[in-house]
Structures are given as structure tokens and as C-alpha cells.
Amino acid sequence: MASQGPVLQLLDFVDDIISGGPNFRQNMTILVTYIIFGATALSSWHHLSDKDFSFLLTFSGCTQTLAFFLLLHKIRVQRSVTGISSKTLQVYVLVFCFRLTSTMVKNGYLPVDRTGDWLYQAADIASLLLVLQILFFMHKKFADTYQAELDTMPIGTMLPALALLGCAFHGNLNHSPFFDSMWTVGLWFDTIAMLPQLWMLVAKGGEVEALTANYVALVFASRVMAFWFWFTGMSELAPKDGSANLVGGLIVGAHGIQVLVSMDFMYHYFMWQCQNSPCGSVVGCGIKKSTNMVLPVSMDI
Image 1 (cartoon, rainbow, N blue to C red):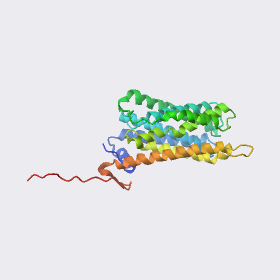
Image 2: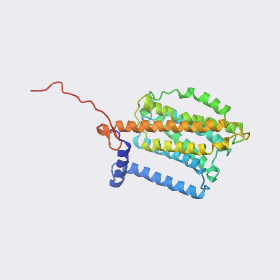
Image 3: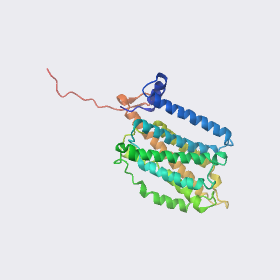
Image 4: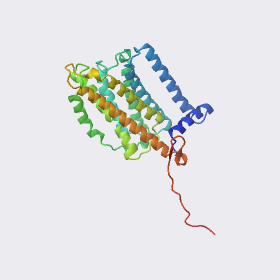
């Protein structure tokens, strides 16, 4: 079935729920998930946070968890992992492992309110478990749909260099070189995690049917919130002696790169959706795919 642009996807989503269409159960699951997520976020804001800016970092982590959950839901419904990069998910496993090594022990890079006591870490643990389950589906349950021939970006060659960068240049919020390094290595791995997925979508032209607009948009929103938090709190990373805030610049720069990569991914995803919509055009996208006119080569008389 041909893909639809984001506007038509939203209209179909609402229509299926109202009319009880063929995707009613799937769309109701998504709707209920958003309702529960919103209610949980509001409850956490009122009861666990100090209603200050630090809650934004927790909300960013929870939004990322929601993105992985909806991606897993789509895989289970479609029984396919077509267009999903295993390398991106494997890098995310490393991201959460390195970050949790720091945040489960030290509080230097945690929100200062009560969400930093457990909710922020719980979101990362949940994301890790979701990613591991997606990888299980990708390489075991639905292995025949995994496009290994397209998931070819040599991301592994970049990881050692980024690990060295994280160990050489890190902040001091944990007051421990080891735990500061672990958090920073996780940050740099997070910066490149989406590159293999973008490679599949752009460089190799792989189909992205198993991906969802929810996943793509939520990942982007999560990155924007994390960047906003660290950009605002950059002064906290400044050296006490008044010297240049090199580490703060690196952390904010890494989050800025994450925003740009996820923005590029979202742009190309929706462009792919628009260009593969029915009849070659998408209402509301303002984009029309050109089609070649085929002339008859012969005519019966």
C-alpha cells in the first residue's frame, strides 16, 4: 500500500478512531498511550518536580522512551522491521549503558528536583529494555524483514575515537573522572546514534514502512528539549577560575548536533512519505511528485 504524507496520516488516524475502521485497535492503543503519557507527565510535574526548568531534562528522557515504545508497537502490528537500522539501536544500547553507569551512582548530570532521584533513570532503563526488545525482533522474530544490505554505515570505526574524546574532555559535575567520563562518552555516542538510520533513509534509499511519524517527531522533540536544557545551564559547567568554558561548549555543541541530525532525519522521512503518497501528491504537503506520461506505441485499427 502506498505511503501517505503526515497530514493524510493524521486524518486517517482520526477517521479510524471515529468510524471504527480497520486500524481502530492500533490507533486506539496509540491514543491511549499518549493520554497515559500526558497524565503521567502532569502528575510528575505537580508531585515530583519543583516546577522549575530542570524538569525539562526528565521530560526529554520520557519523550524518548515514548518514541521507542511506539516504534516497538508498530513493529509488533506490522510484523516487520523494514527500514530500521540495527546499528542505530546498538549504539543506543551503548548510550544508555554508559549514561546509566553515571546517573545510577552520581547526581552531577541529573535534574535537581525529585525526578532526578528515580524517574529520569527509570526512563533510560525503560528505553534500554525497549531497544533490546526491538533488536530481538529484528534479528530473531522478524529477521527476514531486516535490510542488512542497506544498514552498512561503518559506525563502529567512529566509536573508539568518540570514547577517547569523552575521556579526554569531560566536565566535573560528578567530581569523579571515571563517572564524568562515562557520562560524556554516552553523550558522544548519542550524538552519532541516528546516523546509521539516516544513512539507510537517504544514502541507500531504503523504505521506512516500519518507522512511524510518532517515532520520528518524538525523537526530534526529545533532542530539542535536551539541547534547550543544557544550553540554558551551560554556565554551570564553567571552570571556577574563570577560564574558557570548553567542556560546556562541547556538551552544548554535541546536543546541537543531535538536534540537527534528528531534524534532517525528520525532514527526509516526511519527504519520503510525501513523495510516495497515493497519486504522487499529498494534500497539505504542498509537494507534487512528477509523473512521466507514457505514449502508446501502437494502435489497433
